[in-house]
Image 1 (cartoon, helix red, strand yellow):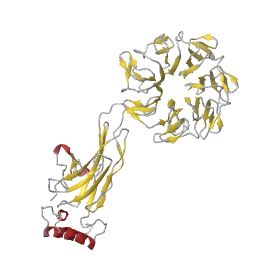
Image 2 (cartoon, one colour):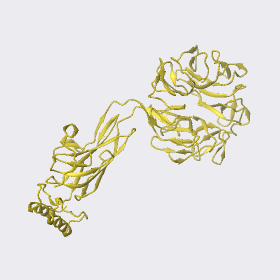
Image 3 (tube, helix red, strand yellow):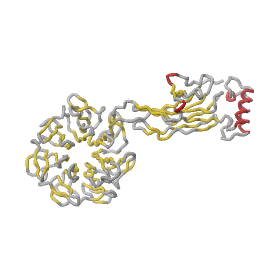
Image 4 (spheres, one colour):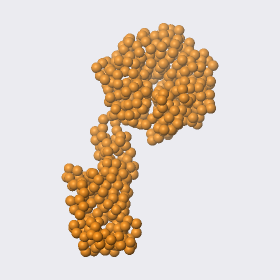
Length: 536
């Protein structure tokens, strides 16, 4: 008889399933810390994700909000696009013909209460539509906004109080109306905010009380000295505690009314500072380089992304979390700058920028941060029948945030409810018992072939398991019924099978030793005759 390397019955490698639960799905959860995860994304030479936002296409209607990602990219997961895509929770899609094309990009996004989506940037068209530097998606198409702007839009915000849209940037004219680098959309046209800003606006946000806060390179707003930071309220511009000594690049108005300010400044404090009606307040140890975006998490923590890599003595490469006391690392961060962050309704943080690696994971230009979950089964391995030679396959379909590790097990001994994890390329039970070849023992699909029952029942049971750091899930039992009588594997039981067995028997081939006693004799002939008479 031939002897092969085999998987032995190892108690430490057994998987026990209670007899009453053989056909149940088994799941186990584990401690799963938040981590960066790849999500696919843009591709191309000059590629950056510049903007992101949550968008509810039907306003207060029943549809769920969607994530919008925009920037400078002409390919997304292998699909040609023009600088903007939408994630609905299960798949990515485009919005019409997108915005602009090669050499243009989307820098900012705003979701209006009525379900419209507004995008600003360097583009001047959306497909065939003329949309100079700003465009509105009305549910079916991109349309212009009263003639648009005469130059680039850098940022926009939707008022938390009124739902109105405000935009800032390089422009000095909006829809034919003089508007120095900042303007308000009325629903049908553009309106200036006083005499506007004295230089470029890079950032804009709103407060719950209706204040609009702008930051940038300007030193005046409405003719008043404001030093790169100004507040529009009651139809007038006001300074904010003396402003900053260098450019403001990022702003966020928090739910409590505070404003977080980021930029290249060193006073009042380096790179990041908070402001409330009573004045400035510190943000822990600060950041060593400029933040480019902020997001308020449901917990109240503040996420900052940008060019920085430390906060005091703490390493926070390109992204950090402020917990109310100081800035904390988020894994190992990114390898290049983070330009935009957005939190979705499930509390998952999405980050985009110029990076290609997030937390050690290859995730070009887009990644998400959050606690994972145990994998779930999307399709069970099916029962199968086969001749002894096979091959036959069992496939386990799994949905998982992280790439799972797979393992397959076989019931051994028969009818015991005990499962032995398959290893290597051959399984051999108790040295002389059931034997078969396997491939893919660590893959989603298991291949079984060359079965030798040797007195084992003709039903062999398998289970698959998928495991991540967040837990595991075990499939239903998948039985393989072996038709011993189909000796020539033509899927029919007839005289040809008898002839094939007789040929092996006549030359005492080990394949004819059906009862696995080490001899080819009449007992094997009787075993085959019994199987043949029983059929399959």
